[in-house]
Length: 207
Image (tube, rainbow, N blue to C red):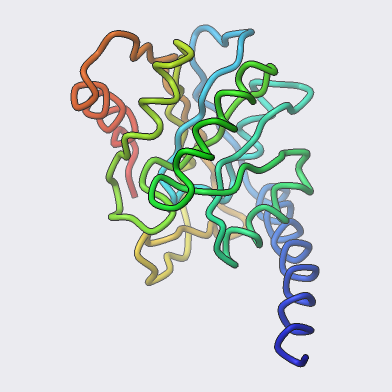
């Protein structure tokens, strides 16, 4: 009973704390946005390394004034925390990964694209290896001929966790550089070639 209570309390409190932390970091930082020359009106897939995930909701607002996106998130406890955090920013979640519930995620992702949702995905999530690109993002993009935009947040000052993804938490009162690539068309490419193109785009601003 105690364990269940602590879990429920954590699922309620940690997303709130996380969302407030993100807002504090953003409010106290200088911001620079490096956006593509064209922003598609149709749904796109936003891809980010797992370790650079924290501040991405604010980059997304520069693409859509009214958020309409679903983020693919691990079914694990930490994934539920992330889902709770992004809900405060008007974003929805799809639970699963390429290793667990992959087929379910693909079906839900395709349905979301058909319904006009953008998709957020971490190609190296939920458990790595770091800086690896899974097949899932390519399959999702190719089945609906959806363009992919690689996104990244580069803080001038940050803490870096010792987790597998070396998760980055920007420090307040620094500068946040937000990067977004030109829309990438993976249609008709062999899967390994498509993964290499996406990897190169994501590695333009690694931490």
